Amino acid sequence: MAWLVATRDGVVLSLHCQPGAKASRVVGLHDDRLKLQLQAPPLENRANEALVAWLADQLSLPRKQIEILTGHTNRQKRVLVRGTTLERVERLLTTA
Image (tube, rainbow, N blue to C red; front, top):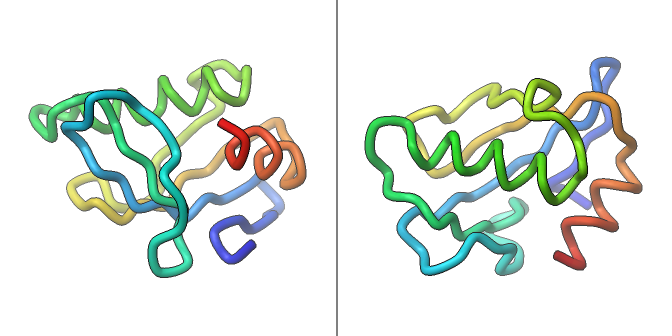
């Protein structure tokens, strides 16, 4: 999977996030990134907070283990997930 990379610190996800959707969900791939729709407006960091909360819920991890590395003000983001494996992230997010 091009959107998933195992690193020394955890798993890095390359995401394309679309805020303002009716529900948060995975919708497929977009330019080698996993495309997510987020049920939050792109205002005042709400979409980023919704992304971290949704990922934590889907992966059954505490929010503190999920960190947005790049793309805080952009739809294209890189997110570090600590305390899990590449296989687990792939399985849980591609069946979400």
